[in-house]
Length: 605
Ligand SMILES: Cc1cc2nc3c(=O)[nH]c(=O)nc-3n(C[C@H](O)[C@H](O)[C@H](O)COP(=O)(O)OP(=O)(O)OC[C@H]3O[C@@H](n4cnc5c(N)ncnc54)[C@H](O)[C@@H]3O)c2cc1C
Image (tube, rainbow, N blue to C red):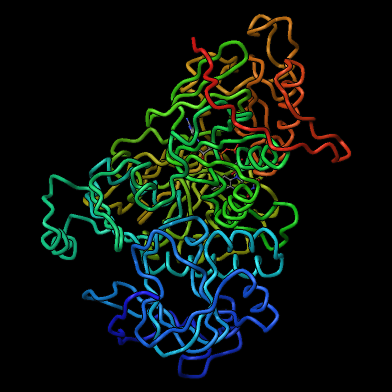
């Protein structure tokens, strides 16, 4: 048990708990509350009991505290507990109250994120504590329970994100560092609040309190943790406990290095590790890639009600952990060198990983509009993703979306839930040529969405924040102004291949060529016929959006990622590097995990 704390007095601001909040509620609201505060049945508690241990608690005991590097899954066997924000500080608030057979926690418990809220016993009672490594076993082995826990954690996380709980970023909208951090927070789906330096008495007060000069901005305040001054991605993730293994743990030669953790990279890593390869997955920004920023993927097989990018990323990350993938987060690959069939990839944090085979799944980056003042508004009015964080930033004001593809359509539908007016601006005459029919049908039925054809955005307007955009009707050559709080840009993407410095064969747009599409003259080894998905260098494969000719879809990336693993085995066998059987078409032939080979460091060139 932890130390006692003075019990905070406050209201249940989210109404998490159906049992302990006063006042009558409708059936729908009760159902929603049951989703975020489920009551475990006797059998479920019994299952969890076999993974944890029981402890008495006294009123005022702190069950976990903000800043704790990790915390247990806590099930209340008797008594009540409160989830408290800013415990012991001005503005202390009770977020939720839980009672018997309910469990505490949110998705950060599974992603390894440092706790940013505290749990305090409000009465005496008894708890079951399940340590986080055992929770991972539960998630891998107890199907029904793992589904319930995951859904509850995701729902709670989404409510906390909507409230702006968690980290506090203080910085100026005109500062590139602030915008970079805003992107990192959004891509990692970290619950946070941004206090703008300009005109925010709260920001000024906090800087005085923390004794931080304006020159040190932007800063990130981690509840109960360190104060970070203009941190890089890795430093931020390290402070939150989410960056993965350090370089010393990654020494030696691994069987498979996957670069990029979008759907393609996650699939490759999960299949690689589950087929017995020592697998490392390295990612620059956040697990989930572009798909992680999608508000709702509706055409993904098996999820008729759609699935959010956040859920897809969370589920895949759990699978990767289950099969023992080593995830290195916040590390950007900056160069590739190969020698004698061994590949060495260096990262911007100074680490280097040597691998027998590499799968490149670095996807693509969004195209930007050629507009003056774009950099001034990126991340603070101009966005390349539409998630709850961006919707919250637009504060229900009108928004415009540029682009006519499926991502633009999904963004429009999502944003219409919070904004009364959503304009889709397209250069063409209709959406038919570029968007799936199911999205067009929903857009046509939605009274909050307007499609403006044959139009381009020509300027961004506003003094301190985006207030509007100038439009050009290209048919009538007429200009007009549209008042908007946010501009969402979905106009295609460029492949993330610059770090390869042209070593692998590319098409004219920079996407990686694979298999029979590679001209013979561009092959590194003309005696080796490249396998499907293999690049011009034997042993290096490309999957998903980064690959020339791939269909730019989550399911395609996942399919290619999993297929590439079999091809990796084939190549390793052909070169005599494999020490395990490849997975066979009938699903048999699983092999023991290949060990990382300490001390083997490939020569580079
Ligand atoms: C808003 C939105 C909605 C979408 N909706 C749908 C949909 O409904 N259905 C559908 O099928 N598809 C949808 N898509 C498309 C789908 O998300 C992509 O096709 C898919 O994510 C491609 O997966 P990927 O793994 O190839 O690449 P990505 O998802 O782009 O992932 C690449 C990853 O590599 C990382 N990376 C890049 N360079 C480096 C480097 N040098 N070092 C380390 N890491 C690096 C990136 O940070 C990124 O995380 C949507 C896309 C967007 C943006």
